Amino acid sequence: MAAKNSESAYGWVAIVFHWLMAPVVIGLFALGWWMRQLSYYDPWYRQGPEIHKAIGILLLIALLVRLAWKFLNVSPAAVPGTPRWQTVAARFAHGGIYLLLLAIMTSGYLISTADGRAISVFDLFSVPATLQGLPNQEDIAGEIHEILAWTLMGLVALHALAAMKHHFIDRDATLLRMLGKPGNPDGSRDSKHQPTENLSTSK
Amino acid sequence: MKKLAIFLFASLLGATAQAAEYVIDTEGAHAFIQFRIKHLGYSWLYGRFDDFNGTFQYDESKPEASSINVNIDVNSLDSNHAERDKHLRGEDFLFVEKYPTATFKSTSYKPLGNGKGKLTGDLTLRGVTKPITIDVSHVGGGKDPWGGYRQGFTGSTEFKLKDFGIDYDLGPASQSVEMILDVEGIRK
Image (cartoon, rainbow over all chains, first blue to last red; front, side, top):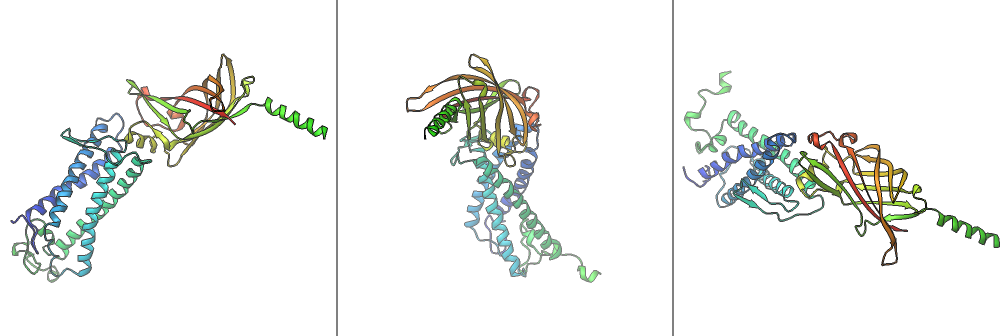
């Protein structure tokens, strides 16, 4: 498989970025939601946020590399036969996910660095504070962080549902493309992925 | 006319016999509202409220007539750690979104001599109003170098977090918080 994308297929770099970051994004959301409910004496009370912040920084670095890669590459066109409104909606959803990720990580950074403290990434390196000391910075950034995180999860759910629709209802190659199987030029899947009989005729 | 003059003179006398009103010098930040609470029972953690205002009445010859009113912007809490401040402002602790202001209104002052006394009043914090007693000590007072007249006091009190609706478990050694209050007032 090629590293770079083509007009009709994702290269392995884009595919690895997608499947490495997807579980991390969802995992960070779950960790963030869970860690806020821990009691003061819970062993995870300090560790939870430490891990959340460190992985958040690593995810931000990965996102910036991914976006750079994306802009240096062609983006595969939608599978042939996709209605125009779906292509446009998908473009907005993808852009929205990237923007939300950037905004969520920026706001998270602004919570933890509001008093000038740096964020330590597993004691490997630390990210210093830059914008700090705004009035109630940690509260405002925290509010934004939470609202945008829930918004992102809504968009992620929509994204996953759309992929499922392409796979199980439209039965096209959209989801398989992100798994490294480009499908046929007409947007249909490779023969081995074709259903043995059509649903409408089997009824 | 003569009667009026006597009346005016008498009312002037009456006014000076009353306790003078002082404005707490938050402008020059010669007043501090600080708290401290034990961390795990191993050390003291300090924080303060930066925005507040208030006035007090004080007459050295009639200290029992002293009184004070203070309004605190709870949002201005600072414990030198943004993540902790965020938690303390949240619903687990001060819930500032719902209860942005804390107030203290004194109801009585009992002088104990030597500039010391017990100040009783109603503290409203997190929507709960309860009487508390502050141990007060007069630090000093007199003319300042810029034409004003000042009086200063220090005081402390202690109350249980639970009494004001805060039941987040910080451990058995951290059930109560101490308040350390310092005010300097400028006579109006």
